[in-house]
Amino acid sequence: MKDNKQDKKKELPGRILLAMLLFQLLLFPASWLVTALFPELATNSLLSDEGIRRFLGYFTSNLQSPFLIWLLLLSMAYGLYTGSGLSEALSRKRHGGKLAYLHNFALKVVAAEAVVSVIILTLLLALPSGPMLSVTGQVFPSSFSRSVVPLLAMAVSAFSITFGIFSRTMRKVSEMFEAMKKGLADCSPFIIYFIVVVELFYSLRFIFGF
Image (cartoon, rainbow, N blue to C red; front, side, top):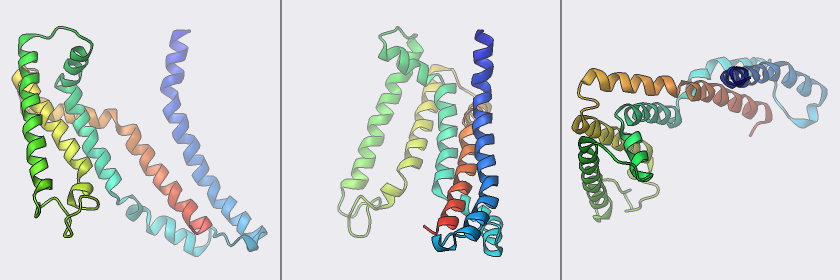
């Protein structure tokens, strides 16, 4: 019984993906039927010349958004965060568990690193001519607001590597590389979903003209 539940849980991501792909395929004949039967709705058909050009010609450009880059950066940071043991150490600390001496020391080093990072970032934002501010001196929008996610990913990666080095759970570059690979592998379903969802969005946007 338990195995059946686990099998169904493993099959769920694939079924969701299949449902989205089928919906994308159905949009082609459905958009043509709606456009032909209800011209007053001012919808566009994906089977028209323009629809085919939009779907195939803009397929790559539709995916060229910061969200995909953010997803990749966060996936690698997640791999380092879990692979270095930092996530487990923080979880134990939060629940009052005991840590090994090296792990406890590594956490203190990470805390000091985080404090220094916050101070530096604050100075970059607090100074009147801070490089992270916009030309008018605003935080939103600015270089800072556009780089929040990359900064977060880099911070998590740096803290994880620091913890791994000082706790001796991740001392080789090859181990860091493998952790990032594992993070990408663990988050790969989200990357696949992102590609399909983006194309669905742009298909619906073309059909309904919004």
